[in-house]
Image (cartoon, rainbow, N blue to C red; front, side):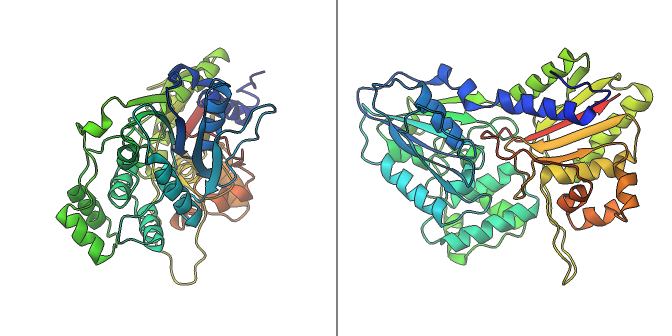
Length: 437
């Protein structure tokens, strides 16, 4: 039963979030895109936070008498429970996200090795979802895992958007940016992907290991310089020479390959909107492609909610305002000895939103990552209510100080307003919902 938005606003918003996640689960979306078994072998390769559930969906849907094998890497603790009677035919391993580790490196090496030696009678099913960039790490010649870890940390803290980060990652890898597809030749490659990026560009999702890359070494250099990202001098020289260029659109290695988007942020937002309307609340989707600093996006959302609450514009209340996309957090430098804040994009959005709402009556909000993990914490996101600021002040908590040290987790934990779901086994990125009554 749908919770009553007037009496249970938090449960109602959590209900919308759950509807969005449910729409993106692989088992609901995979069957229509599976090709028939080939004459030869079927190899399943993949990476991403949804990798475990995608692999299990293929196992459940693939003909029982048709050969199936492969290897997929997902984030630690993101392998869903295996249904009874579901035979394990695809190996699933775990690695670190968002900063790569040795387990991810070992998995990437094995996946690349499995791609070699295939024939034109073989089929490669590539299961790609968000998070694959960190999980499928195979540094370019001359780079160590430690180098990649440091570069990744710098990118994550820089405020660069996902397109910029993945442009760099593709050019510093031996498996991303179409290189995995090149290794699979001459086998047919069918990529099934769950989008976690604005615009649903498959070349950005997990840094596009099986699709052409239109970006260049020159663009990667510009991004590194724009954000002050340090890389070894030898690698910069290779970038300047174009020696780390990726396979481009039109390359014959991609001939006959297929790419299918099996779940997208827009589809999940529409599922949440449908649930709101079924409860008698009109729903409006702003966009599934929102980017920018999380706290600033929160302020913009607050302005819309306040306008709806005060003037019934641009949306008449009661209503739900939904948005998705992938915002960013630029980590602020702190004085020596100051404890570092904790939190992710969703929490920081909620801090910016609560600060700008200033206790506006009749407005509640929930922001959460659809994979169930906000950054590297154990929460999916956070919840904001009209009394959020006043409750915090009664505990001696000033929101400005928490914003200054990027400590959304600390702020909402003390209010018992963290949204904790555990891994959802899918990933269509940010989910934001505001209820205006």
